[in-house]
Length: 333
Ligand code: ADP
Ligand code: MG
Image (cartoon, rainbow, N blue to C red; front, side):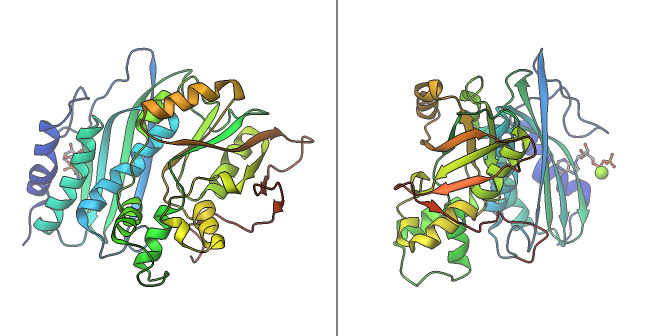
């Protein structure tokens, strides 16, 4: 089956975009789309690309891929405290197959409609499977949750649980003993990997409360360093307070920690806020219907040239030396 590029765009994407949320002045069909932010606000823009073999396996279910392609971009808006407005979709496809495109579009638009985000354009070409979304959101000029705002004595918080997506990947790779997880746990870990839930409501609720934030995509250890480097600060983390699901707890302690601290693909929000905001942050989590957990503290660098670092300790305050790295996409892993 071969569909012309135009027919493919119309059938699987443009039609659905017209019947979904309308958040742009002009959508698909012209040389450019036209969008305006809310009056007095800024446009938050982010791009994320998913490449077969690198970010997903050739066998990945297309509906889940449609979900995840948009979800990782929505997660960036969440981490900025931005409200979704619109996105573009650039696709390279080896051979366009109707069944695949239908399922992919279903996964994509289910999420787009749920978060009121409009598909406004893109590009479609032949090539090894490659999925790229650029997303646009609205954020008040002073309300954006940036990486460079962490301050001395801030609490460090994280949403949800960490490490589940890495454990889900371990299931696919056959890394865990057969039969370790029951059906429900198995489904929950696969869900974390295949269908991450962008924490948009939490990001919006943290406006004006959090001093800094990002979404955890490459593992807590690596991503927290990004906040520390941008904010010129140190952190101490109580590893025993890092939220871990009951499913992940079935793995040996060192494996749990490796998954939760350096697993990647979590798409939870990591943020800092002053201690006086604790109650307000707990309320924000409740309103957004997601658990928020305090896992550590920000401190000042001891001298101007000190490199930002993370000090890890356990519940008994015993220091832990962890050689942890987030995923580095230029590494062999
Ligand atoms: P151009 O040659 O001007 O780049 P295209 O023929 O590539 O135009 O695209 C025609 C229209 O369809 C444009 O509005 C473009 O944004 C949109 N479009 C192309 N591919 C996609 C896609 N995968 N999803 C949504 N819109 C798309
Ligand atoms: Mg084009």
